[in-house]
Length: 486
Image 1 (tube, one colour):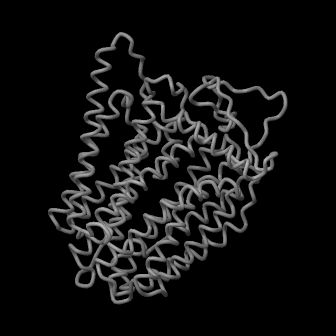
Image 2 (spheres, rainbow, N blue to C red):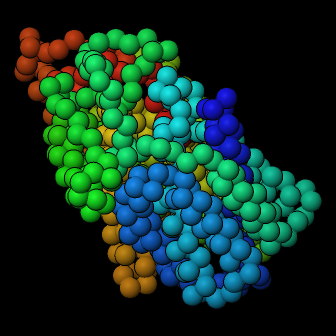
Image 3 (cartoon, rainbow, N blue to C red):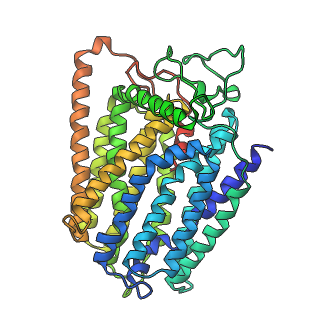
């Protein structure tokens, strides 16, 4: 019961915070009579602020989330969402919308608190189950919001302003839940639970039954002779000393993790593709609006978002039935699917038919969710919880850094400030470049394997890497699929 209570509250919060009927129609609403913004103002001056704020806030929020033990940051996220959608309903003008994007960037950056909180209040044996609940409910909320928004627009002929009001009400309902969550007594870095005397360390390669899983914080994934340091904010040097120790441990873990070639390869694709994914999802509604203006025609953005979310989740869960030695064919698979994503974006840009745009977007998003699930599995299968947070935090930061560079050069008015169609041509080229990079990497890897065939290590269907830098044990694939958020 002590674990059921916070799990239910987290699910309630996750559902209502992602129930956003206005999301598929945001660009149409902002360019409509209620806000009367132009495409140039929206694409080149307002939307880029989300990218910049997300990048700037990500690392400070990452540290603050752990230091404050999650709950205060979760409340901050709830407040940010309420402010965001209140401004969406009431505020007017470019400056106000830029401030709105700043608050939404804060809400996005604090998303880490939601997904980290569960690991501080439930037992390790329940991580998989609770993670599955929380991830699934956020997907359900997102799909339900998109579907409800489309039905209200198409069937009930509800003005888009009322969708924003419903989203605001949903955010207010979500705001209530975090206040009743219990305050965690430990976190991953600053506040860690000391081991009891006589507690024997668990070796990396020893198999542990699922119902007797060890604490991931004691897991040493890359070097079994390494001892992970324990840091508490209350130790001798106080908070500043604790921060220095945490930063030092993060830096040492960073060097160790990314010295592994297999992990580095998947992380590179993760960062590059996530950058492109963020950029396309952020601006695709502007392209749809240009192809089929919502003021003149009926649009079906809500159905498209619902279908793409559900198909993406189905594709991600379908990874479990794919038996591929990813250590051998991973780079070439990433190349092939990156080509699919590049072609989908290119078709959106050149055909300029709304049904082609919708179909290509569904293919693009489902492909990304499939690949990000595989990449997550390959990266996280043998990482302890600390390193899981570190590696995925670093990958997200690099993706945002690249996205910021792309936004400044291509989108922002201080750079080229391109129209939406040239932008999407660049995004298609971007994914084509990713495909070329991993084609060369895959061919190079196959060439090395052919030369060293007698010394090659055996592979398994679960996608174990060849490198000794990762251990041979890995959690079930469905657990990693749940962790991806797809």
